[in-house]
Length: 159
Picture (cartoon, rainbow, N blue to C red):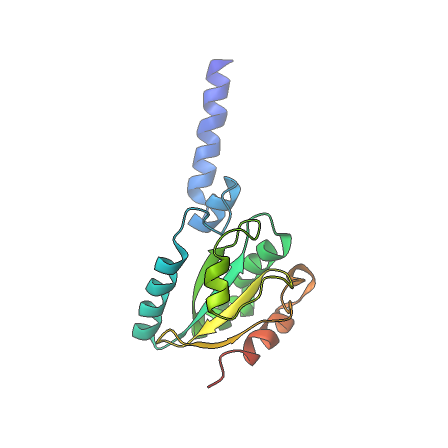
């Protein structure tokens, strides 16, 4: 029995090692929203990277328990949505927990979490807020197609 358990555990580890890092974290139950991250540090790093790459910053507020947040994360990782987002933005995900984490960061950007998550803010390469979703535009992300998400993002960050 011990040998079989070891074999199963080794197979699981090998399977996780074969997954891209983000997918491995999700498979372990950690999810795309790092609960131990310092949101301000992550945002500052994203702004620095965006400046160097001449892109805007897309700050996504969400949580690992939120099905719409997970759906948006999956959608942004594939297809034309992934291509468009990566072409235009440096993405940073901010964990809001059960609406008890990083709420102050969201408020400073003018983002309201009361209409649902995920919600996003777009920052200039200098860190200035250019736009944000204020009415729960992405709160039904699991039922939105790529085009609908792109339309929401297209309205944000126009200078």
